[in-house]
Structures are given as C-alpha cells and as structure tokens.
Length: 185
Image 1 (cartoon, rainbow, N blue to C red):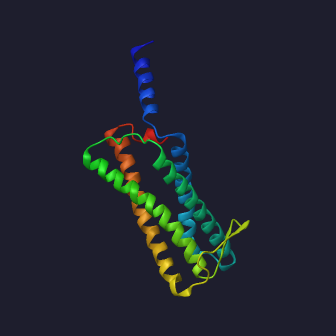
Image 2 (cartoon, helix red, strand yellow; image 1 turned 90 degrees about the horizontal axis):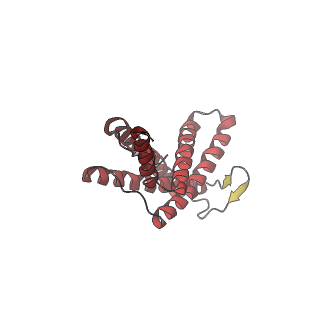
Image 3 (cartoon, one colour; image 1 turned 120 degrees about the vertical axis):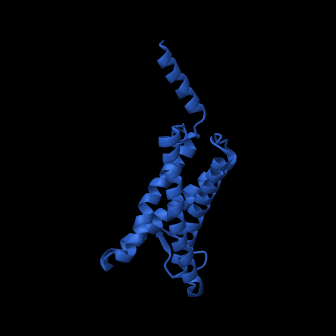
C-alpha cells in the first residue's frame, strides 16, 4: 500500500468516526429538503392565482406539519445520542451551537405557529388531503393574526439562520478546508 493510499484510508476512518449517526444525517437532509420546498411554497401563496391557492396552502401546511414531526424526532435523537465534537476556536463553537440551537427552535416554532394559525383562522389541517388533523384551538379570530405574524417573522428569521448556516459550511469547506461538511454527509 502506498503512503498516499494509507493516508487516504486513515482519513476516511477518521471522518467516519467523527460523523453524525445515520439517523441524524437522514433527518438533517430530509428537513433541509422539505424546508427548501415549503418555504417558497408559503412565499408564493400570496402570488398564486385563486384557483390554485388552496393547493399551495395544502402542500405548504402538509410539508410544514411533516417538518414539525421530523424535527421532534431530530430533537429526541439529539438528546439521546452522542454528537461529534465541533472543531474550531471557542468563538466558532459557541456560534455554531447558537445557530444550531436557534435553527432547531425556529424549525419547531414555525410549523407550530403555522398549524395553530391555520386552525385559528378556522381551517383545519387536512394533511396531504388524506387525514384531517385535530385542531387544538379551533376557530379563534382573536389570536389568528398574532399566530400568523409569529409564523411569518419566524420564516424570515429561519431564512437568515439558514444563510448563516450555509455561510459557515462554505467557510469551513472552502476556506478552512476542514472536515466539517463531511460529518453530515
């Protein structure tokens, strides 16, 4: 075995031992893909023709509800499993933990407030047109607009956090050239 092949083999062993577990990686990418579908769907609702608005709502709400349950699984997995250590300076580790914590929080807050806002406006969630989901608050016009405002602000905060997260990934991958990205792949 050549020195280069041995170094490559050692590096792949090192990377795999420092990776997140398969459930964490699967949940990470499933949520990321669903957010990249759901966020634009929600934004486009205001621009859609009246004959397709209900379809946009159905898909946006259904994907959002799925994100909520995947995030609850993700939080449960995170609390019960060991994560690889974050590399970098103390400031980088604090920033990474802070952004990740806020991402988790807003990926729960956003679908919860969206679900409750829909209920408060008097529309029960009909998940993908298959199952009507029980409404915990029913029609409540007094709080509907507050919940909608929290949901909308959460969307913009989530977008900013997503940009920070992607920026950090690119920084680690392209500038620092460390193994951060490979831990979640």
